[in-house]
Image 1 (cartoon, rainbow, N blue to C red):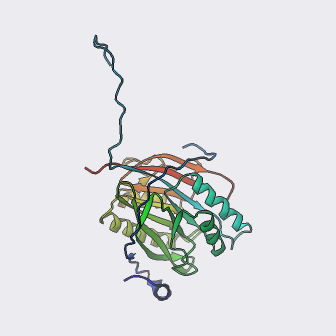
Image 2: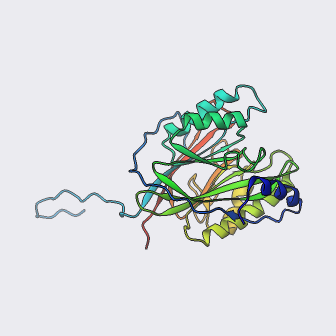
Image 3: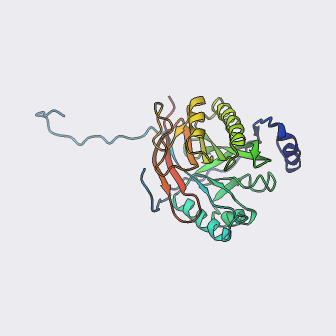
Length: 298
């Protein structure tokens, strides 16, 4: 059953027991404009035998036609309800994401005034959930470039956060050039000493990932502030095919990034490259970005 704002309020009251069930909204139809490439710029931290025949120029390798690439980013922008300068942070964070040429992005700690500003700075991007899940449900936002991908479905699950039941949003998007889809789940789990809340949240998020992977579009990307250095990734990787975009593999799925912190990018069904952890001074968190190549279907 789809969640309306009134139904969401009732959900919050009932989710103390944390019976967490994914909810999918009605598919959305859009026109499909041509895809345009975006440039990328930031300051970053790193992570034949001879023959007698006449030589010929080697054939350049090409990607299969129905493979496609994405740029993903995640950024905790520090809520204006916590620290001054929230509008300026939102402006700079939105510009940074656009400069990356992000096809999909996750923002955490987004206050009401910051959401309005990000939407103003990023007119080519659509957002979920905006303010549709209530005040406490708008702190996590997923944004996607409407010129390169289109929205197919949206949904959320409930999980505990500092004593409240709050939503974790997710969307199913479709690459406009190939018509192939993928999922983005945006995370912000409880901070500090709230280990029990994080454990409950992680279990629910793993359940969601499994459900999404069993569905129509198998590539799943989980990005955001998980408030754990390694535990979240290790639990997810043990239960699902997801690995860290920071060079993760089946044998070593969760290499901790240099100066490892609480922000992570995980995914499955794709080849990852170009991971960058960017200390740009906008927030008290670094911004993360990576490329994902989804190979052609077998």
